Image (cartoon, rainbow, N blue to C red; front, side, top):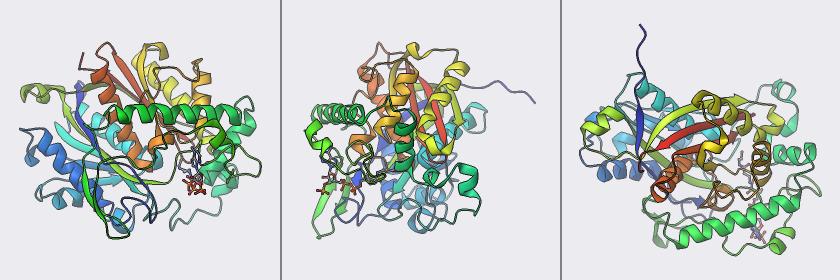
Length: 395
Ligand SMILES: CC(C)(COP(=O)(O)OP(=O)(O)OC[C@H]1O[C@@H](n2cnc3c(N)ncnc32)[C@H](O)[C@@H]1OP(=O)(O)O)[C@@H](O)C(=O)NCCC(=O)NCCS
């Protein structure tokens, strides 16, 4: 039975502040599911008229689905948020793009008429559930994925530097310094305020505080400071703590609806879904995958990179961003890209980063009513890229 696809919109996008993982992190004593609950409550509170009975699914991207992140968090979290027992939910995994995939599934789900309204997001507490925690790779996995460096994300970034030596450490450091500058300016200008939902937390030393600001950004980063950092993934390598994203805790979520439903409810959606694409490459250079994913999504949308007025790219590593920009013939500091800074500054709590990009797109669309199309793109461990295009409805 062929059905017509329906238009789907992002009504709202919120996130927690992002924290540094570990004992000094703002969320060290906060559980992953307790990062999700305030977001669910906020989405309901910020969108009057939306009731729990309208939410037809709660889809969550989570990389390490065990301990506090296990047990089908997507289902349980809505009950923890006091939204009743009647909201179905699930947890899915595409590593770093888990949350963006949750949104992608939600968008297509609504487009196909399987739901009118749902919540999709991502969460990762890398302090409690570190990367690779309790994983048991198949004995042939290294052979099929191209060797041991495929399993270590920092080494995959070193591999890009090695295979494409035109991207130097100096270029990566310069990109990272600029990212920190853009983030600092955006934070000082209050750009994060609308999207960050404050959470009451207790720190390791017992101090109580409200987590309403990102912890990882390093205002005032300099080329000199960058130059002195160790290269932990390779002796005399290029990737450092300064030009890589960090180890972080955080969550982000979106409220998705059919455009028809949003209109009928008198809501003001932020953007309309245009197209989605996922692509895969050699896992040892996983950071190159946003390129084929973006080629594919542009083709599906019948658009070009020049049509993209705003580009939100997850900077797992600076070299991966440089590769993307070069392949699309863009300058390293193209003003359309990560205008408020990216993951090198804010951090990259794996599955929550995709919805964070969507929240940034929504904020930037609002600020730039002249902007029509926006792209969110990210690389994924094991060699994948995920790209989504949205159209600005705040024009
Ligand atoms: C790169 C990495 C190993 C660094 O971890 P770390 O050593 O715990 O990082 P830190 O934040 O403590 O930084 C290390 C040092 O660099 C310093 N530093 C970091 N950024 C800096 C900057 N921009 N300028 C100057 N110094 C900086 C820190 O102050 C710290 O100094 P110290 O050792 O004197 O305290 C870690 O962040 C990592 O693994 N990142 C990649 C995550 C990943 O793979 N994600 C998935 C992507 S697909």
